[in-house]
Length: 204
Image 1 (cartoon, rainbow, N blue to C red):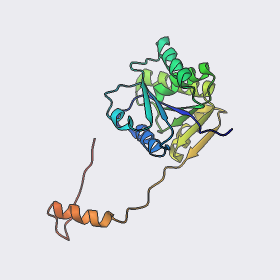
Image 2: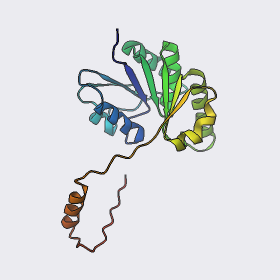
Image 3: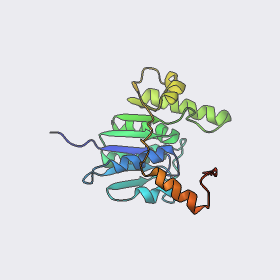
Image 4: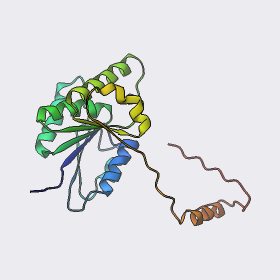
């Protein structure tokens, strides 16, 4: 009997970022009659928690998970056992380390997405140790690695030994045909003339 694959997305937090944006994309592709399961190790006050907590999305939040706390792994394990996913999909460093161990404890297949060329954003000895733990967790407990883009794959492929790996290219959406009209409307709104150069700066 064929059934929809039940995937548990495990992520460090739901603050603004590329991995979190990916969850929004996955949510938009989730059928209305299916439930998208997310385990966040952040907080319900994270900006994307509210945006993702709609429709058929169910988010479990386990705050203050720390790598050195055995209870963090036990808490993640209990969520996995309750949800009973077919696959666990890990995103970002802490979720990868804790989720890989907990997934192995639960006997569940584990996939880890590697989103960045530099996966650990912390410098010094702590950063080196985190990178070591992340690498070891993937080598020992992860069944497949997904690289987000070729550059990410080239920077990290050597770390994971014989773990099966696949690269998914970043894609660029085709231009919106209504873009030219919207550009003109924006220029007029800011008082720009036909020959004026308009520069927009976006930041976070």
